[in-house]
Amino acid sequence: DGGITQSPKYLFRKEGQNVTLSCEQNLNHDAMYWYRQDPGQGLRLIYYSQIVNDFQKGDIAEGYSVSREKKESFPLTVTSAQKNPTAFYLCASMGGVTDTQYFGPGTRLTVL
Amino acid sequence: QQPVQSPQAVILREGEDAVINCSSSKALYSVHWYRQKHGEAPVFLMILLKGGEQKGHEKISASFNEKKQQSSLYLTASQLSYSGTYFCGTELSHSGYSTLTFGKGTMLLVSP
Image (cartoon, rainbow over all chains, first blue to last red):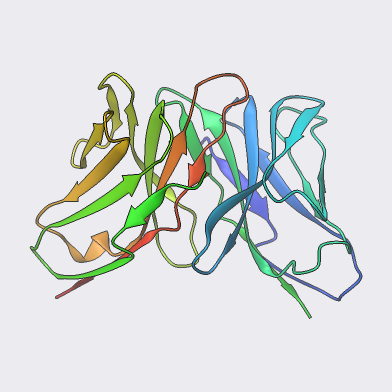
């Protein structure tokens, strides 16, 4: 089955630690996105990538970094510079007949 | 600029109807609608394109008023499974680097 996978589902980290969230898709989509979701805020764009080895900052990129070495993979690193990292993180890819975004199951990050 | 959704929340009894609106201050190329259950990924419902084309689930009804830059999602004969938060995502233009900007969501609760 085609789809988007994110791991882990729940992640706990101590303040000052970097952590990497995984996102993999087998939909053969070129475009991939990372969003952060906080209660009552909707989805806010962190980074996006249209092709391998190229990515752009979204609205709230500070404190985050990404890489796109393979078409299928778009990992997100939450660095210690991110002041309030506790949130629900969603990865998406875009394409297909409807040319819309399809989301992974999300990773809930909690900073202790 | 973030689209504005209204109402913020709505409570229905099973079988009742509801309309959720999404307004933008800028001219849009497309509007994408999603439904999200708590703790889960947003699920694609429908895309409405400038010029009148629509793609999505047959049982979902929506409209896009290009003069007002407003889209409306019509939920008729609501079922318990309709409960969740509905988001609209707006696209200003369609290119290789297009992104969606999401509203804050409309929470819908359908009770028996």
